[in-house]
Image 1 (tube, one colour):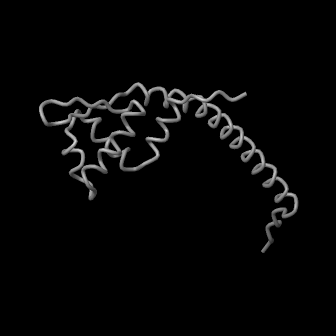
Image 2 (cartoon, one colour):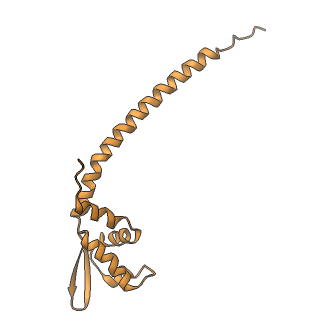
Image 3 (spheres, helix red, strand yellow):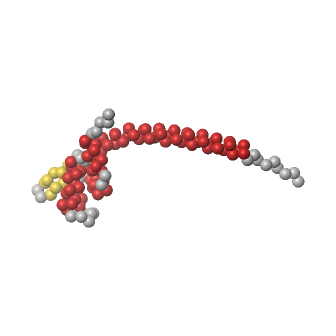
Length: 127
């Protein structure tokens, strides 16, 4: 039976949006205010806040209000959990690709041998 991890689901759901991934990339350089995060996008501040709420629910961002300014900071633990989950499948697919590579190399040798049998080199002509 497959076990689902709600935290992992929220992480991948949050990462599915390119704007949210860009916000995380910005925050990887250090904390930023909501206004700073909204600056590069052609959307309203409330729209950016919705993205930040999704990231916060996923545990990817934490917010702290200082005076009238909200500062956001990247939280790396959910990303580490997602990376750990993906690494399990990375090793599986690497093994699959290695097996495919071995098979294709073997097939190439077999086909080359068959071609040589069907098309022997012509004997050199004497002058």
